[in-house]
Image 1 (cartoon, rainbow, N blue to C red):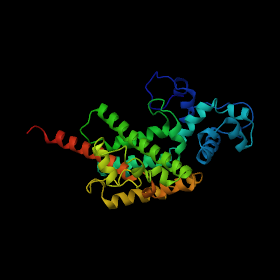
Image 2: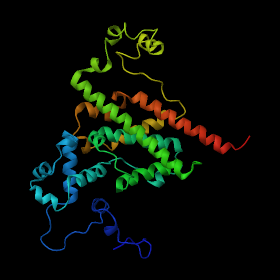
Image 3: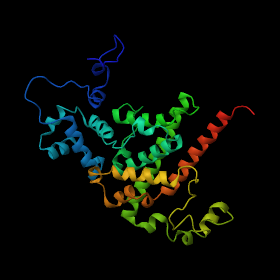
Image 4: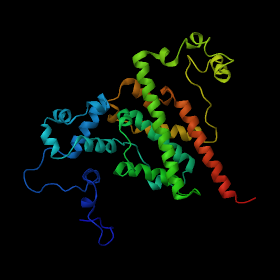
Length: 310
């Protein structure tokens, strides 16, 4: 049956949507005949997410999920038609980001909302690093992805932006969170495999001294000589003091920590550290600096748009 507020004559969403979208939105029809199924889409997806959190996306197969649940692979196919559909459902189900209600968001400055949104998305990828291996396939249309997008757009509601600019800003912030989370995950994995010294390039300043010379590479050579390129933890500029007040940032961090419960169970200890203590993430300073640049640039545009002609 169509949604109650659907226009007259509109198609039944269960028929109009691809099957995996209908499943995600709870619109897929269930068989009326036969015994009540012991399996469900939810139990299959939950098991698959647990496996991916513990062992990575490559460990998720229909056979492995079936074994985890004590069923045959054919039993799963009665509920989820393919592994591709399962991955799409996992991707959306794992969006365990706490989203404030409109009432909780009322009166919150737009910069705080957009900063909190971007930080939450980045942390989310660190909790579920396997999601970084899923190709982007189109506009977010799954229920949790839609809820997440709506939260960001809510923060832009009062900004003097066109609709196209709102979508561009949403994509920019999403890409920022995604890119830095990917960097963090890759650097942490490399450090576990090869050690911190190799990842940081300890000793390369001396080994490459005769190649990276001041004459050939004057600007890079200056950074190497200052000790900020090889062999040290990056220490980029701190965010501007007025961007997000310290108390607000602490509140955002605490809220995220309060919402981390059993879903962190499958992470490696090193990755848990990056989730629970942002200071342990290799690129946290650079991430905050990039976020500052984006939001301060946006603030400058907003000021110019609202100031009017001189």
